[in-house]
Length: 93
Image (spheres, helix red, strand yellow):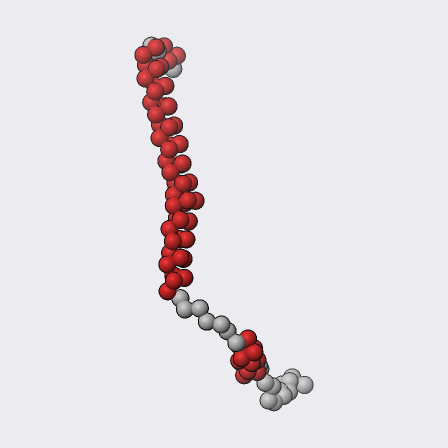
C-alpha cells in the first residue's frame, strides 16, 4: 500500500489542473442550481400571471343573487338529509 502511494507523483501542473477542473465543476453545478431556482420562482410565475390576465378578459363577470343562492343551498340540504322512516329492533333481544 505504501509503495502505491509513493508511486503517485504530484507536480504543480497536475495540482493546478485538478484545481481548475474542480472549480469548473463547482461553477457548473452552481449555475445549474441558479437557473433552476430562477425558472421555478420567476419565469413560471410570470407565465402563470400572464395566463390569468388572458383568462380574466374572457370570463364574463356576473353578479350572484345571494338570496337565491342560499335558497338553493337550503333546498339541496333538505333533499340530502337522511330520513329515518322505520325503526329496527335488535335481533338478539
